[in-house]
Image (cartoon, rainbow, N blue to C red; front, side, top):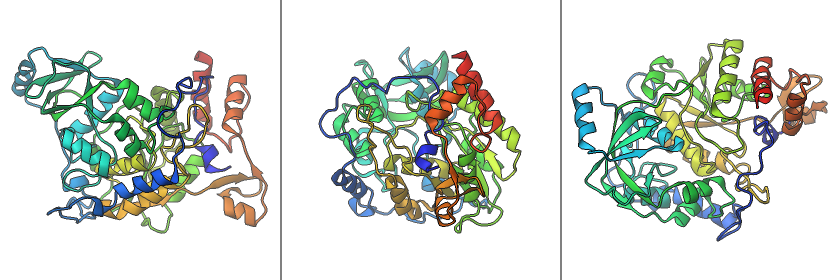
Length: 448
């Protein structure tokens, strides 16, 4: 079974129409053309910005036998003094913004240091620099802009605004700048296309407000979630010192092939002995046709209990997927570095997306892998390409090249067929999926 089929096995079980398929493309073709790809690759080369006096000791240690966070300092923006919290709330004078699900994820990652070295939402200059160069103004790599949007004309620089979410007071933001973003340019530079057929372009064009505001934030309370999200500091404290930590990013339930991928990664040539794998799924908003975060969380929890393997660590990330391909691969690596990871597994078409009209891929199968591998040394990290594993009647799971050379009989089960079998109550072969995961997914089907 090819990895491209594997990564879509966990797609939504219900019949949902393609994401906003009535919207027609604008500006350019939905496909990620070679000229656009070359332009995007160029934006991340160090020569595009002046590095000034930035120290480029990217492989530095945090002093505890663990990789240093991005920018060498892990941000902690939480305010713990009750008097200071009261003062901050009073300084807002009633001004507030209700965060979207995506906005709450961004605010949380800022507050706990997942987006280190950022200490707030990006100013206009920082935003422009990341859009154009995928770098902060001091030259540090940063894959995608982290912004707060608004359509409220009364929110202006110099004021403080309370950020709320589902009845919680999440943070107070010092509004330092307000600007009208060039959304077509942001889309083209960050997603490789300005077509509304791309879900990320739809998000910035249709979900976000007309203006962005930038400024430091003061964390008051982390969003309440059904799935607990450990902070970078908490997770770092649990990870072994002096060991490689291999991160596995996913946004779908984990099946047998995924398990083969991340367990085999621990034996890659560039991974030391006694390493651990951190399975670190994103449980925030993804694509509209992905399985809901709470269901994904339940599948991970039952699988964690079933496997009971100390070399596999589990944590959940409050991150909102952009489906930005190569740029997002860099973003994921930076976040995982802040959480203490030294290695990152890159799959085929990571964070990729298809046109909501034609179904064509926006990115090449290995664009994200190549991009991440190119810039990993600057981050002080290493990539571990995911193997193309298949299940064979004779030898179980092997790599596709071994199956071909030995002329083994490969068994396949498509994602579509898998969903049909779930709905029909048919038995799912154990070579394909874990029983515990199937039980959760079947319950989701029956209750929908």
